[in-house]
Amino acid sequence: MSNPLITGSILNSVWITVAGTFLNLLLTSMAAYVLARTEFIGKKFVLFFLIVIMVFEPGMIPEYLLVKDLGLMNTLTSLILYKAINVYYLFILMRFIQDIPEEILEASRIDGAGHFRLYSRIILPLSKPGLATLGLFYGVYHWNEYFRATLYISDPSKWPLQVVLRQFVVRKDNTSLIGNQNMFDSSINFDFASLQAGTIMIAIVPLLFLYPFILKYYAKGELEGGVKD
Image (cartoon, rainbow, N blue to C red; front, side):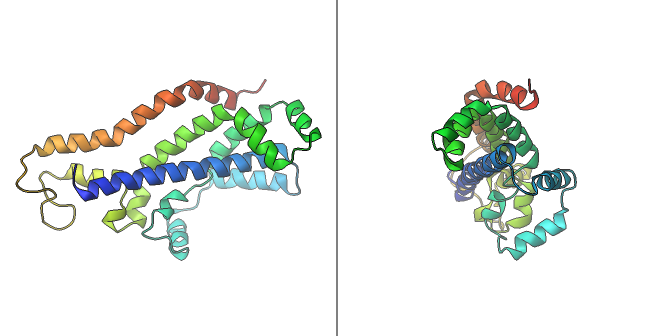
């Protein structure tokens, strides 16, 4: 796996997954706290608007034009920022936050805690099951990113692993993904089918290692997010 295209694609996917998931959890948790635990003018309208955009998503053409107008074409940022807040996941996390006893928050307010302290010291620690569950969903989505990468990124050096993997697997020989030169040193003998299988394993193994660490939160998170006493 000394080919720079494959190595670079792995690093691209890691960056997209880590940065994208962090941004997703940060913005989703902040929005969930505001909508679940604060009152402000127009809150009902905001909730209604979120439901509308969850049901009626914009088409691919408006999305493409927006990315182009923002100058994000051919950048990894276009993949990191896409759906920074998933509305469905937002509502799940809101249920978690609503289940936190009001007495805990009220006691913190009496001690002088503001919104930032409530969010960082109370809401986030008590929402770990929900955050872990959503982190898994967000992370798997970013790691498996393919379709929008093919639309927004034309530079092969910026392709995530899944795009390279698709190009790599459909080929039958050691032909470069770009042009006709060999992908690897022609003096090296190897089984190309085995190389394809190895690339697929690279794409799968990180997720297999991730699941055991989050599994203890996953079932609890799914149940608590959908059931309220």
